[in-house]
Image 1 (cartoon, one colour):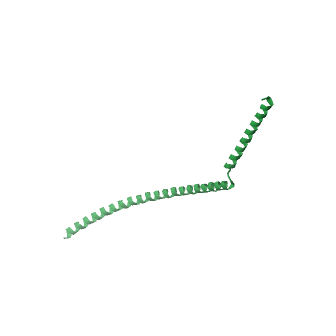
Image 2 (cartoon, one colour):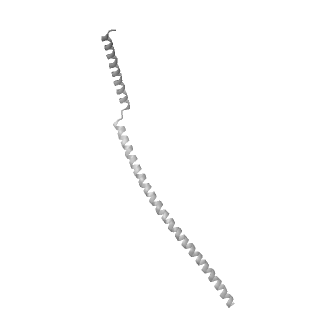
Image 3 (cartoon, rainbow, N blue to C red):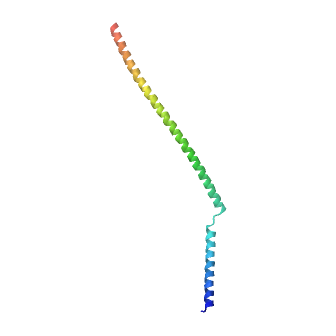
Length: 110
C-alpha cells in the first residue's frame, strides 16, 4: 500500500466517521425534539402552578388571620369567664350572708 492509498483510505474513514456522527446526531435530534404543543402544555402547567401557589399563599395568610382573631376572641372569653366566675362567687357569698341574716331575724321574731 503506497502513501496515496493510505491517505485516501484515511480520508474515506474520517469522512465515513463524520457522516455516521452527523446521522446519529440527526436521529437523536429528531427523536428528542419537543413539539410546540408540548411547549404550550408546559407553559399552561407552569401558569397553573403559579396560580396554585398564589392561591395557597393567599389562603395561608387568611388562615393566619383567622387563627389570630380566634385566639384573641378565646382570650377575651376566658377573661370574661373569670370575671363571671368571680361575680358568681361573690353573689353566692352575699346570698349565704343574706340567708344567715334572714335566719337570724326569723329566730329573733319567732
